[in-house]
Image (tube, rainbow, N blue to C red):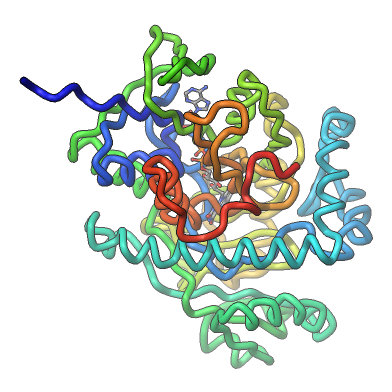
Length: 416
Ligand SMILES: Cc1cc2nc3c(=O)[nH]c(=O)nc-3n(C[C@H](O)[C@H](O)[C@H](O)COP(=O)(O)OP(=O)(O)OC[C@H]3O[C@@H](n4cnc5c(N)ncnc54)[C@H](O)[C@@H]3O)c2cc1C
């Protein structure tokens, strides 16, 4: 007699979180089906800056941010903006964002983010040799630039928070010292912090597709279908899709910025919003970029992608429906041209992506409070690529009923 097959685990969403989770579940011995309405790396995971930013442990809602925010918000093309048509909709999220900036919550946020970063870094190092990953990453560090002593000094609490979490960095003063790490920068940058342990992928879309390919090669099933609803049954979850219904033993919701729609259908109200980000990618570039460069004050980064560069960042609170405002990408590009000496590439491809963001900058990783066979893994905001390998290990532990390696209390879906 053949043994009855164990029920499938269905993972919804083939962005970096879903693909990584599906691969980890498959390798843990489950039968896994990965569903996406479009395909692998169809949304945010395709065009991001490609950084494993393990050192970024601070939530966006830092103490005092609400004093700075109005100044930013007055500039409609500044690094943080709310689309007027979305201002009323985003108000409840902003209230929670403000609460997350209270010192005790901020400190709890730093600790939780740190624990996930430590796990994610170790998980990435575990993953790399098993997927021929070393040739697909760059270990070139990150340079965060400041334009004055006072701006640099204002950043010192953040560096102190990193120091307390054991993160290595060098603080640098003077243009010559900065040029030793990255030549060709405008003399306006007088101070910097260099984090040598930062890693980048060569190309985030290719990386996600590579992991997706690995999943299929190892026996995972990848299907194209939009998931419309989840209905918990006695010992299964019914997954209602655009191509029919499926039954799963467990379901992982990793649908990025769209995940809360599925959660709401189960009765879980999770305040997921999107921080829209913009960038421009050039397939080739003459500027000798040696590390990942962050222009703190201006809210954007320059990173190597393939043989070229990607310039972008910014945060626009504007929901999932409003059309993109590519003036944001243009502004960042104009600034980059004045910051990087001799950088004047032609053309470039503009992109907007939907960061899936919770107000406290922590993802939701845990079982649905209303449907125990549903595991949530979404809301990684600015850090989805960074935290993908760690999240995948946590999802695999939850699915197997094992105690996860870190406390998941700060990431619980019901924390709001
Ligand atoms: C400008 C910018 C720069 C960034 N830079 C970085 C960086 O350097 N480092 C970093 O760590 N992070 C970065 N991020 C954030 C990172 O890109 C995201 O956190 C990450 O991509 C989220 O991955 P995800 O898998 O959760 O979502 P997504 O990649 O958006 O994937 C979600 C998937 O779910 C599918 N889906 C949605 N609803 C359904 C449904 N009902 N049925 C079936 N499928 C569905 C979608 O088609 C999509 O493929 C950046 C983001 C932006 C915008």
